[in-house]
Amino acid sequence: MFEKKSDIAATLREVGLEPFTASVERLCRPAICFVEPEQPGLTRFGGAPDLPNKAVWPVRPGYSNGRKLEQAGSNRAHLGNAFTSAAPLHFIAQIALDAVARFGVLKERLPDNGRLLFFWDVRCGPWIDSAESCRVIWDRSPIDQLVPRDPPAELAVPDQHLASCFPLKSVAPLPVWSMPEQFMLEQLAERTGDHELLASLDDDDWADEWDSLYERRLSWRLTSGREVLPHRLCGWPFPEQDDPRVDAAVSAGGTKVIGRALTAAESKQRLNDMHDWTLLLQVDLNRLAPRTFAEGLVYFVMREADLAARNFDRVHAIYQQT
Image 1 (cartoon, rainbow, N blue to C red):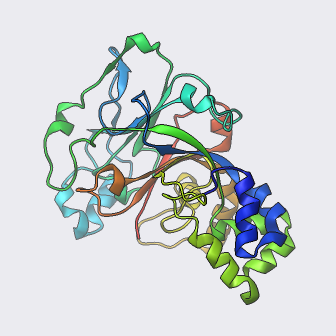
Image 2 (image 1 turned 180 degrees about the vertical axis):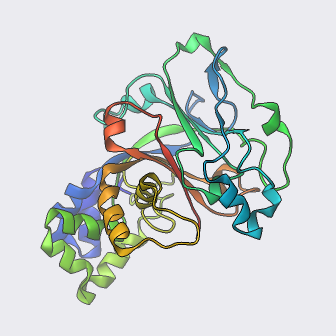
């Protein structure tokens, strides 16, 4: 990622990709990373969410395909009937939107008031890509009405397989420019008719230069060398496997069936559908709970139309690990 937009041209020049500067600049998106704060604020990962007294902690019902998930394999045997039972969701993060709005880079993307609160099903979420496994709440209550909310009793009981709650990490937002990873870049170059960029991505003569650029794109270090936390608000996702927007399109399209691969027609349709989706937040679970998750990221993605309408009721959570 680039700390400033001017860093894009400078970095491409350093690695020998200067001819493609205009193309890359056009495809980069503003995003927010997170750094250690000078003083604690409302933006945090883990800990307790700030909610009004009367707010109800989000609880998900039993999954619509829960029986299939419980029967599909022994690697989930320790979860018992968790997929068919209702359960409260774990608190993941809280983003103070006024702090983000001060930078202006996402003013066309996000509301400028209130807080976004992210919840996810830590127990079952790694096995299901779904809108059922998460909740995103846009809370606009006055700050003086907020109180830290302890998790429900069910989440306070220690579990040998996961954290009962994530440790508090106060953070501050930092605006950056995010670049699509290589598969996304190919898709976008093809979609926008940028034939020169597309050809360079498949040309062995440019392979070393592109590899050099992507080596600088670790999600926890900016091209300026500045260290950031490996979480990201908006911008392009940093896939652990493939583009999580594809997984969301598959899940929303109702074509993901346990034990069956997509047909060629379904795959083509989902690749086209993914452009209707956008990243809202990605979270590195190992940094969130290093003693619990050895690896993995959870991506909160949503339809562009829902984001424009400020409708956070249909966000999907996608989990990936290497």
